Length: 369
Image (tube, rainbow, N blue to C red; front, side):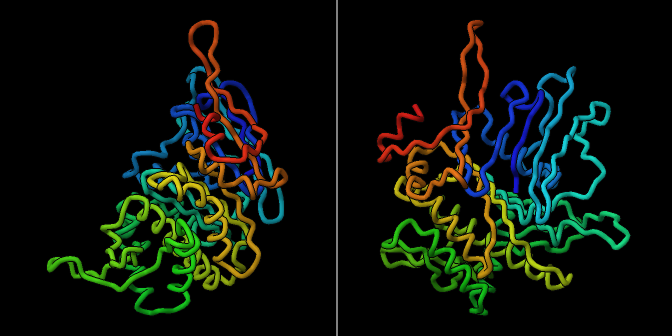
C-alpha cells in the first residue's frame, strides 16, 4: 500500500509538501492541468519502479517525470507498506544519467498494482510475475510490468519475442464463455457489480460474428431494450466498464496461476489507480461507480484482501456517491487548487481536505466551480 509521497522540485506544486494516502479510498480532485494525472503516474512509479510509457512506448501518456528546474536537486520520497513491513525510500534524480535512481535494496511488495488510464489504456504489476528473488538474494525482474494501449486491451499484448502476453478482451472473453467455468462466472459477477443500476444490468449475450471477413467470435451484451450488441459496437461508457471488468479478472486469474506455478501464496493486497473514474459515464452511473468498484474487487477472492483505491475525478456526482460509505479512518480526499499570487502568476497547492457531507449531488457542484 502507498502511504505517502513527498515531491521536491517535481510537479506543479512547490515545496516539500507530503501527500498522505488513506488505506482504503482516496479521491483526488482539482481543475485541469493542476497535476491529478501526474500524481497517479508518480504513484504507479513509486509502487512498481517503472513509468508506464517506459514499459510500452506506444502509450501517449505516463511519461517519466522530470525536475521542474533542471539546475536544482530533485527527489521523491516514498513511504510504502508491504506485506510485513513499512519503509521510507528517497529517490533522487541523477542529472548525468537522466534517471531516478532507486536504492539497491529489496523492493517492498505492495501487492497487485492496477492502473486504469483515462484513454482506455491499462497497466498491471504482479508481484508473482514481475518480480522474483533467488535463494542467493539476487533480484531478478522477469518483466517490468504489463502495460496496454487501448487497442491492446481488446486485441492482445505481445512480447518482443512475438509470444502473446495477454490474448485480449475479445479472445479471452469468448474462450471463457465457451468453457462456461469459474472464470466466466467471475466475469459475469463483476459485470453485474459494475452495472449502473439494479434495473440496468450488464450481462453477457451470445457470441456472434460481425462480418464475413472477421472469423473471431465476438462477445455481446444483453441490452435493456432486448437486443444483443457486440462489445465492439458498445457505447464508450460500456466499453470503459467492460474493459475494467475484463482486466480485473485477467490480472487476478493470471496472478493465481503464477502463484500456483511458483508455490507461493496469493497476495492479500491490491492497489487500484484509476484516472478520471467517471470517463464516458452517464451522471446516474457516476453516482454508483466508486462503491461498485470496491465491491467488484472484493469479489475476486473469498479470502480477505486489502484494497486501496486511488482515483482522480472531476465529477461532483462521484463525490456524492461515496457519502454513505466515507470513513475518515480509512478514506481521504486530496484537492489540488490554484493559488494566485501578487505577481499575476500562481501555484498549485495540494490540500488534504476534510470530507464534508453535503446531502445531495446538486450542492456538491459548487465545490467544482
